[in-house]
Length: 466
Image 1 (cartoon, rainbow, N blue to C red):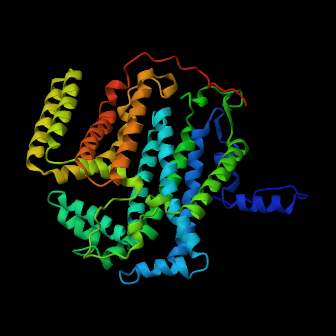
Image 2 (cartoon, helix red, strand yellow; image 1 turned 60 degrees about the horizontal axis):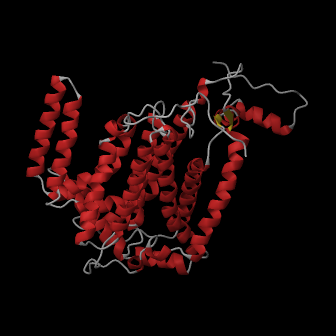
Image 3 (cartoon, rainbow, N blue to C red; image 1 turned 90 degrees about the horizontal axis):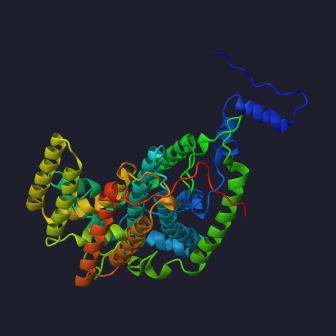
């Protein structure tokens, strides 16, 4: 194919000529038009739609501050803790960069949890956005791995023992478990090899995967278009030029909106960094200001707050809890067998139930705890195929659906709180009940999501200018 230089008028400005030169060699203008100036978003987006832009902002902050921290950090078991102290005390503005990075990790999860909550209540995972949701869940999973590996790097007491506990859990997986945990550690105990391995993943491998997934997430979103609080597809109502009647260009309308939101977010972020970077032990635990000591176990080991709901479900699975888990699985598969009329499907579900019964008997509670903790994250991937509601948005669902979503959110918060606290008999029982509610929300969704009287969905979005 012959190369064609983009033509511009002879009296064009230098800027126009430069842009034409670039466009002839790189699709700059067309990319800006496709994703900003000519990308039409619903005109009724509300407060909950700012968290996507905030997530990109925090990701950029984490990458930039991480680069500066890596310049002075030493991934050595003998020097890691001292290098962090050196950054905090000797490097000019090192304390600020470190606190921005540690606060950014927590704020990243705040923003991502709010972003996922918005997708949950407005049905942003429904057709045609299943792949957008799957990419988003992959980002969440990658973010958890990135945070876990970064948590070990300060080489404090909680970092060391938290990694020790979590890595040892993989040994509970039958057949491959011991070898898998050995590969993750790089040694028989958490030590220098583990630190180097986690540093490599945290600084190089996972950020590259994360950036790629974010790019795929945005491209997939802009291919099908943004959802809105009404769950109405704006591409179905177009004018004579093919422009959505209920859409407005993302730039400048939503870029201005996002810039204002970013300004407010940065003020909150700065207030935390300068006045409460440890957030009373929730963002930075007090035990992590003590050097790692393999010979002294802390009295209570708990992960950072954003992992605690899943950690709480891990601790909830005890030998006694396997019986309620089996009953829960039996009821679920009983509903599936009752719903289907196909004899082959009924036999298939019954066979799965028998296999589950055998595995419940043969495998110990530690294994099932790992499965529950992993399943509590992986189950988000299947949400588009679990929800059978005839409408997307919570606005047009029955009232009891809102109570179910509310119960799920409250349960998640309670599990998070219990994961921070030291184990207790009452806390264990509450965690077990919370675990059943958490999984019940997803696994029973094919039935409850289509129950009740649904409100009629408007053909066009509802919007009142303000």
